[in-house]
Image (cartoon, rainbow, N blue to C red):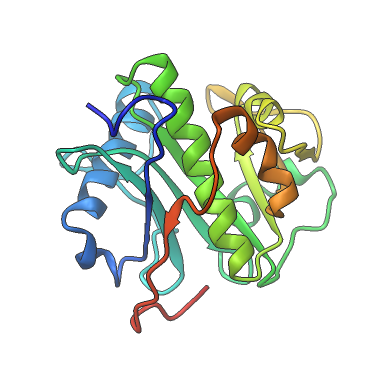
Length: 219
């Protein structure tokens, strides 16, 4: 089960590796969900062990996570954020997806990655979890001086961002990496950009429970 129906507001948790202990087993549950989505279902060949997925961009000092847990404290949706003045995926692994666009190195731009929702959720709940997790990341970023998110994703997921009203800028055509095609782009985190998500799902007010722990050393 998840917290209520698609129109019932859930609160999204935000934490880093250094603050994850405040959220029970959320970090471990998130790694299990990422394994389920990206390794088991999508078939990506990426680092994983004991039904958990993590990589070099899961850094204790500057990686931020957003999760939605169900009533049993199981993570059913999650996302990851790294500011682009730290090492990030698009720049380090697939700069060709920028098609000549200058890649950001700025505290005002972050990369969103590993966004996923439990595929076993009903379709309506799946859509709502994705929208809410996206909105939470944008809300937190804007409150901390981050004006844009860059991303690498499937063409279909880029269309989903468009349908959410985010008006992403796509850098160029999709490129085949391994067995699938990916593209890159960016979108604004400004409240005006996320308003369509709020309008469609009837969401008002903050969707993220922001905790400022002293261990949180990077934005």
